[in-house]
Length: 235
Image 1: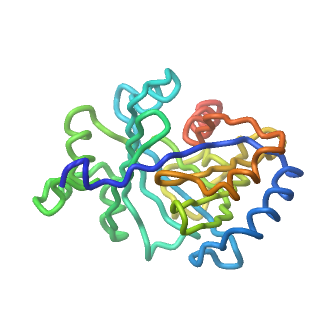
Image 2 (image 1 turned 90 degrees about the vertical axis):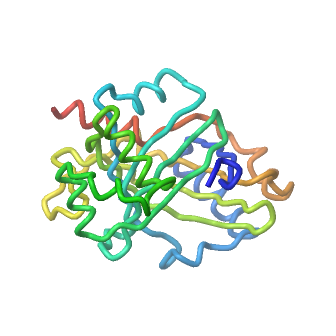
């Protein structure tokens, strides 16, 4: 597989307040469909992010590097039945994502610092193989758990996906997503919400117009940076 096989997508982010959320939510509901994977319209996203010994992922984002890469393990509604290992590559405002599934046992192995199974040939060219290479070069380790509630909407035209991410919180006492005693602390002032708009090549005009007369400011909000900073406050 080479880069021409990956689907590059555009990503625009906004920080909004609760009032703006309720207005935009009604507008998007009128022209888009709820994501079928969301029970009652929402689901919980929990991700364990990794960084290397040089804190490359953190520093690249803070310093505004055009090309960035992050590894994370993600689950939905804290279900151990569906665990994804993801590699997210960004170049400015476009990027692509690689993803493989993990068993609970292999998640536990990575959490314990054992990446050796990712050296298997079947992971070559995947997020798993890339993670093993990155770990071998610069020693990856768990950095922070990011947790939030997501309300998603989709539109087939342009493959547009709009998400409202709320109650964004960092785990401040551990790195195991499934641990019973995890303590989470909010990271957004006034419980603001992150609005993300993702699309392939274009956004239909009717969707783009929904954002034009609302006082939203495009902002490169990074949940990973916000939660990493919160965790460092507690250490």
